[in-house]
Length: 465
Image (cartoon, rainbow, N blue to C red):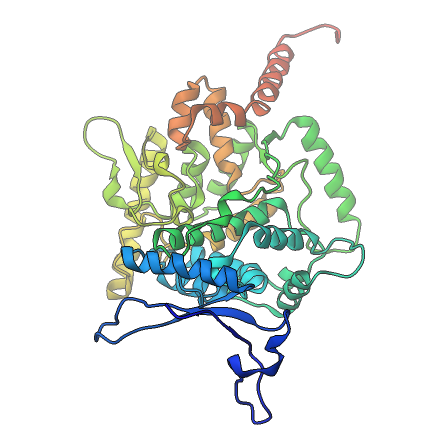
């Protein structure tokens, strides 16, 4: 094997690369050491002697040269030292064939805004925990007061953030004043971790630094019940807001995850019937059986059993290669949900409506087995469904909840009706029974207290106690 040589990227007056001929290479801090090694012959049998480097010292280059020679002799893959993180992430996302458009958009956003500007210049095989930690530290500094000058990595993030756009971005989405949440950083880390796991399996790297980085875990967002006291306080806040100049602001709420009482859930369902909301069967299914938004959007008719003897069911299934965001969150989420008579009747009526719409559309109707589609037969877009739901909530005048909160409403109503915790956990598709019990430890006592108050109020008294 050839001896290591010292090279640099300096050029002469004509722009020619000097390489190992640069006169400044006599200085210790100029240039770097490189080593040629014998790689396996190419497809045409030609000899290949690629460069490996850069290395800080000649000793390091010689030591790594021995490792390269041993790897080549054993037939093990030799890491490509010219492949950088940015280029690898682009090839990785391009090769993810089974992603939904929504998932692909989220991964691409993470790469565009954070991973490539923060880590893209680093050689993939040289990525270490300190690089990743530095990126997350800079992400945590976005929209926060700084002591001193911003780091170089933070400057790169801010520069990209100032001009970045992508298909799913909302106006001024990147230009608000809120810092990035720990949950946001965790999601970006999940994208990097997935990409690095692929690189490790493909022998592009020997060490996966993403597995050894400690993150600030987001606080667990426990559901809170819309108790009468919280509803009264919310109505007072809304009345105060109404007296101000009209601005479309987020509706205030006591916590990020709010759950309706059965009375509020019934009031909302009654309004949907009164308004003749087309997707009423979908919302009724979610709020009573606890499906996730994307699960409901991906349901298919062949996976239902709505007629004949035996229990009426609907199976929550997904392709084996589908990503979590495309519908199925985990293996335990693949489940069969037993339907009650009301949901069964609603789905049967919905099928008749869908067939009538298909007949009217004729050949323009897409070939799809999806249960829930728009009037033209196209599968529902989850983001548009959430927007439609938010509009219905504002129109109702009821205390606000998110579409995903209907799933929590379903769990609460099932538990309040006396359903076994394990049965509720299986219906929701939770991986662990304890997760269901832990999630609703706050909601259930409040609901029980509200029931106790209602029970006492039923007793007629001549004088208030």
